Length: 297
Image 1 (cartoon, rainbow, N blue to C red):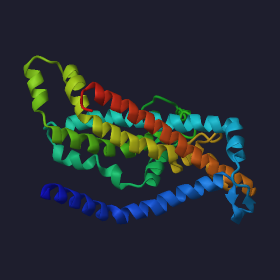
Image 2: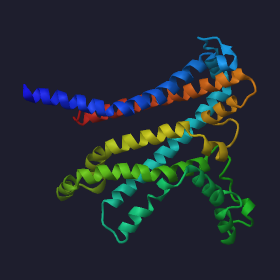
Image 3: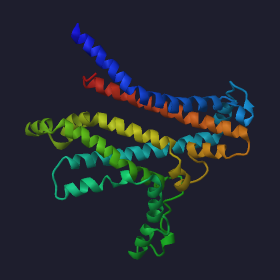
Image 4: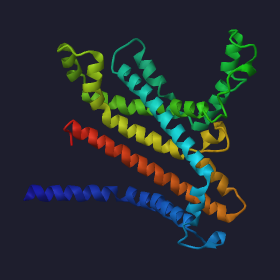
């Protein structure tokens, strides 16, 4: 009985300790989310709009073909950059658990993008990948093209190479840190035992390493994907223009002189949250099934 009482007391102390941050999240995140939902449903008296509950703004948004094109590019930029960054992060994390010359210095260098704002990454993309940038000038100097203007256009296209490169450059170190931390905690005993028993590298990675780093993969990729879904700066500056990603589309609605379009812009923001939340829920459900297949749930 005393042990149970101590356990209950410990739970209450932890709950009280989390109360301040919980209240902040409830007020800032929950309040903002509630206000956005109300505005998207026609409650914005400060704009002279008070038709709550009115789903007409969602209906008008979803009937517009531009919305579906914007959703396509939003998902494309978000998913492709997350997958590319994840593959590179897994490879880098696997390298970092091994000893090699200069590892200490490299262990600091690869983290540098974490300390650099996205705006700086966007500026670097313009300097490196523009038709008058370093890559085009280097190609001309090497004789691959006659003039830097002949360099393939990488920025401001719907292929999104500039947007994807900024996301990957910025987020790969974050995913590497998460995966590397799991690898260090798990140790290499099981891998070494499998190698002694005759397993090849692919078998070791598929059967041992991949299940071990699953939590790091899921947590880091979810954070990066969710951020990319709502990111504004890179698609706005480096994207291909109309049709824009959903955050840029919402921004254009907010800048419209018609206040009704601002309510429709809020409907676009809420739609981003709904779609991202649905995709994240499906991703987590698939991961839980994978964990269950391993007997860990």
